[in-house]
Length: 238
View 1 (cartoon, helix red, strand yellow):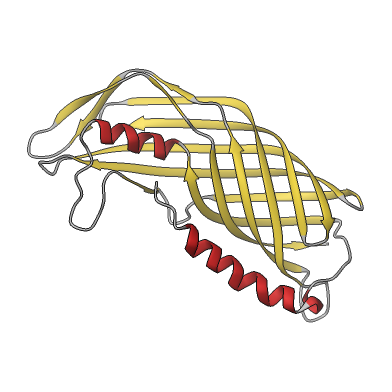
View 2 (cartoon, rainbow, N blue to C red):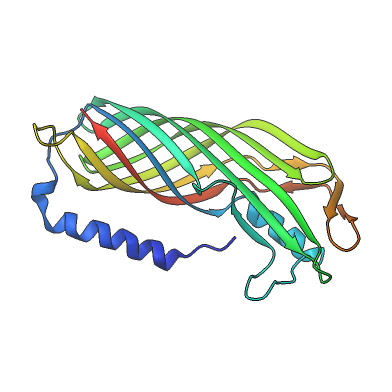
């Protein structure tokens, strides 16, 4: 799975530097409740595993400048999440986190035939967080991960829900307290790691469409589903 780290670091610096240079944008009052949504780019996860397996099967022939195999998001949002946190002490919060990470991986054979695999990791977590200041929060906690992998065209679907964990670090880049002119909104950058057990996928067959439809053997294997996500979010606080 390709990930443009340099581009995201540039975006983060572009957002963070103006905020840090203007401390009036950030109040030192600790919020009692934070509610936010966000989206980001995925690094690793089941898509990366599927790409390696497709390469082994010879499905790594590019189309022009497009390299194969290739993993992309199923929807327009690369990885979506929502979270709510409640302050229980000046430097502590507890909260609930939910996220969904749907991806598609496509491989291409030498004759132009293509094969598709769908992957998904949906997570629900209970987080305990430490906040050294109003604009930084670091948290972790247990998470229930629902993972799935589908070999398109062969009716082979594996789904399983297991307990894992989730960790996150959020840094606000702007924060406006409640006023007549503005709601108490904020924007932030986030780095998250979702630790999920590997998914046991039984042996099956992968359909390859093309001049002649055929099936390639897909071996039974343990597919890694843990992954990183770096993203941006917006929310409000009280």
